[in-house]
Length: 426
Ligand code: SF4
Image (cartoon, rainbow, N blue to C red; front, side, top):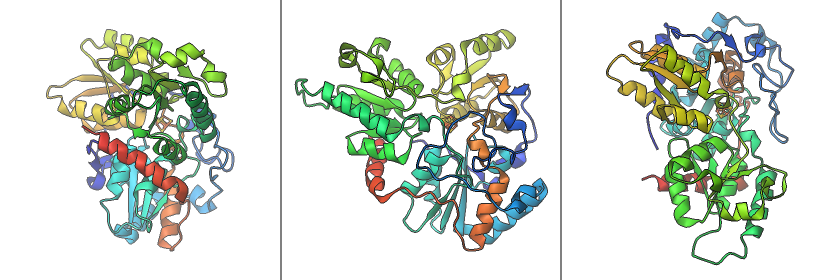
């Protein structure tokens, strides 16, 4: 696992004075430009993708009106004062895709697994404030000590991709698959190994841990698939079809051996022979942000900027990854830009907050987002500074609000799945 993590103690955000040279010209949803408090009660600011809070998830209630009415300057002063008072007792984590107004308070900026691990370096931290989305806070809770509290400032900050695979649907799929493969000759390998992307609920991390499988990130998906192919005849990959397809295709798995599993359809909508011939079974899930990228955007970038280097995230559709110069995780993208010694034009296919931050950090390069329409991760956007001020001031008052706690019965199996991933690392 990469440790390319930004220690934000020198405040990345202070350096952000230069806006993207090719700033996108509109937003994917008018809700993103609306007053952050105007969205329906309990659903947080920034709702734009019509995603639902899954049944059983804690729902964000209203917070004191003073946070809603506070000016940006007031919130800034209150957050900084609370942070100062809490000192080492709290660590604030900011995901790469988090908005700058929040990231500027983070002690660490990185991807979800890097951040969960970064929190472990702060021994004195009693509270881990995760400015990301729900599954990230769950992962931090799985990895943190029992005496630490993990806090998600707005409980409505979920991940629409993670929500596309729920426990009952995956269990139903698993039951069908194990019944289908029950009469196969035993060659010492499991008929199918479940692999989940980090972007899923703790319930599903526990599911794969319990069933001989493991977790992967976008950095190590190929390593994890190799591990699984050594031990199983097939892989059930969820929830992101694109990461699964792009990774397996690069490893030489033919597309005809990667059927899509559509939940609530018999055999996922496939016939028996297709499922028996399958090498990687792809769950019908995707990221609403990365799904927006298209090959036409790459064609246009190449026409307008001859020599442009196109780098996209593997959550993008296969056609986009195929047309790009390179594809890789957020960490890969950041390292590729950092490694460029000559001024270079980069067209990036990932979330806009990260792209704009890279553009500000590397002014010697021209860096822009492939998508001309601003489309941030709308669920992560729900972490407004008002929510951050609220949870921090509650901590100062000795109260823990918005704590994310993974049930004890899921902790062990989920940790097993994460540990297998670390052990699979070359
Ligand atoms: S960018 Fe996509 S996958 Fe990442 S947290 Fe947002 S919705 Fe989920």
